[in-house]
Image 1 (cartoon, rainbow, N blue to C red):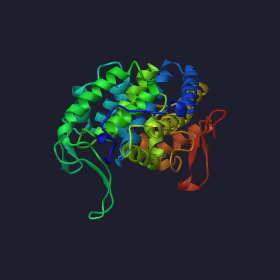
Image 2: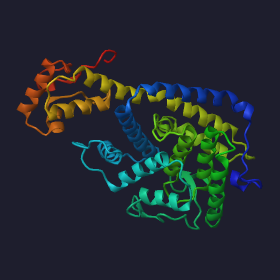
Image 3: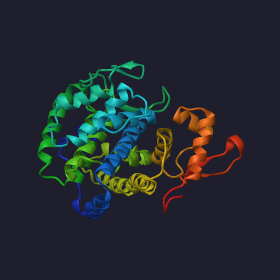
Image 4: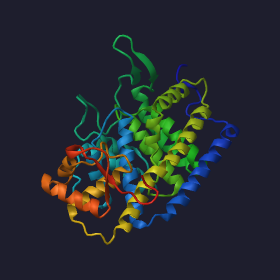
Length: 375
């Protein structure tokens, strides 16, 4: 017996409740604090917070797998799916729309039945062309008979980190998973259930590709069921990305356990969840700063180009717009001439919406004059 799924008692997982008591309590406390903080958000700000979180989640769940998505495409897709303004955001691609739709379906429809049809639909949305990179894969269906291994290293010296159950067992394994998902909703703590679901699904590895992204979608769905909220205020995938090495290490360690005890995995999962909530201040803070900025300048006369550029800087956050705003960047963002860009920047400097940073001539940089508490 090398892998956990080969254990005779699979998949009857166990864990040490006493060992998890402290970290579970801390995670619940962080959860409660977050929900208290977001009460300050009005409905429109709540929508914008959701858009920021959703954008972050889509970007990071793909980045964990080594896929770098175009930020503007993701923002465009998120805005369109949430019914928010899309002016100036450009168009998204089918693959970007697919991952946005999965994350939204997982959270906004958390109370709907989870079954094979729904999961294979998610898989089809992930790979709309039928290809993963240059390789044609089985889209919208369980993987075939070939062994499914997670490997690293150069050809000839590969290291096998994990091997999933054989292909012929997948259909039965997933039937058991769906039954466990249904029954566990009422008899396992919601946060523990989210962690178990993540590990359980990844162990089965039912698809040829996309298992990680779908596992994180299921985690979001389980967390939404626990919180009974359709709006996300933190990005779990962002925190996993920050701790990616530890994430893969604890998954591998737990998958090779001599028994079905998931205590170590659940301890890491709950800690990661708590740290993800801790980082939510940054994302929600952007929304609140943006609201404060426009409240402060509600009577300031601006044209649509100026508003568009200011909103782009506000969406990036304090000090996050790489290289600062320049006249050349303004031309690109606003789609106008250099002379008009210079005139409109000067106007915003005079109205104290922007401040000049370092540089001279064409190398002059500008930034938002942030509300009190900003940079």
